[in-house]
Amino acid sequence: EAQVTQNPRYLITVTGKKLTVTCSQNMNHEYMSWYRQDPGLGLRQIYYSMNVEVTDKGDVPEGYKVSRKEKRNFPLILESPSPNQTSLYFCASSLSSGGGRWTQYFGPGTRLLVL
Amino acid sequence: KQEVTQIPAALSVPEGENLVLNCSFTDSAIYNLQWFRQDPGKGLTSLLLIQSSQREQTSGRLNASLDKSSGRSTLYIAASQPGDSATYLCAVSNTGNQFYFGTGTSLTVIP
Image 1 (cartoon, rainbow over the protein chains, first blue to last red):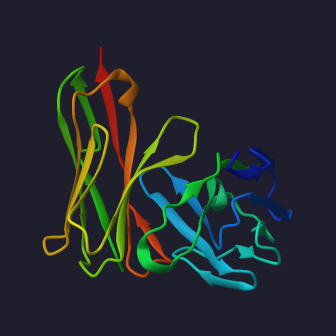
Image 2 (image 1 turned 120 degrees about the vertical axis):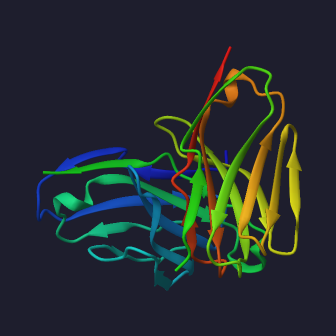
Image 3 (image 1 turned 60 degrees about the vertical axis):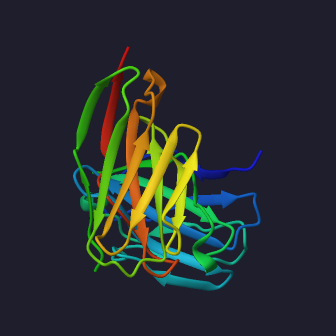
């Protein structure tokens, strides 16, 4: 089954404790992206990747890191989480970013609480 | 920076009614526009994607239109059903890489 998976689905942590949220897709997609969703603000893009070893900042990249060493995986790293990073996080992928033709497929989300 | 607005924030209709959801954006130089559906506690599901060269797209009871010059898109849902109850989001891309989402319209279809 074609899908985007995220782990963990729920995470409670404390300020300053490094964490990684994994994202994996099995559709051989080139493009992957991370978003956060907050009430009243909608989804905002954090980082995106057009292919292996090619990443770029989205609208709200501060406090986050990403890497794309393999085509299928795109982990989101919070080196020193703070309470304002408490949010619902979504990973998404699409076949390509070119041409404007390709729809994004979303993972189920990771709910993060930073105390 | 692209700003995307969806009005109304919430909508409640009786089953069987036809309805229109609105999305407006500030920068008309878009690459594409997508409509998504989000069910509570779940991820987003793509409904329709309209490329910048297109005026509309249809899928079943759904029809999305795009008017770039006025910075607007509408999602038309025909003969609404209780299963259509969800939050509907529109997303605009100016480059194909970066996406800007509206805050969504929460739709409730009453049986």
